[in-house]
Length: 202
Image (cartoon, rainbow, N blue to C red; front, side):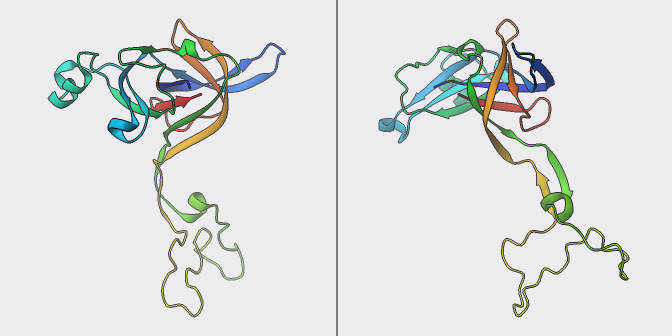
């Protein structure tokens, strides 16, 4: 199992050996450190916890400092579920070099927050007609009732906050690796704004 934490930078395009261009997202994945191995006996499930990024040691509280046991002070700590953790141990480094060109990965990140949006943008509603006496209802939701019911049904698609959700995109491919700069180039769009923390699993 392959996994690493990274930061979304920007998008670009990459030409493969056949001259075909692929849209790609650049992710800065600095080396991460394994901070804990969880097991079924002690924790009820198996996973690998890793820390990435830098943080001032004075800004890490005492419980977390004791948990890290001198491994460092990290800006981000995440867990990755793994059935077999025998190949990992606390203190090991995880780098982009573990990935290879053509690897299929899935990426999880928090999507861009878009604020309070109406039903046309949030759910793809068509809005009302532009003629036949309509004045100000071009982007309104229309009826939200249910005929004989006197309540709004649950799960009714309405206006509200949009974005800011955890999104996982599967079946993306690694098209380029820059081990010196700790950069991964992954096909397609990755959720989130520039600077978003991204979880990559292979």
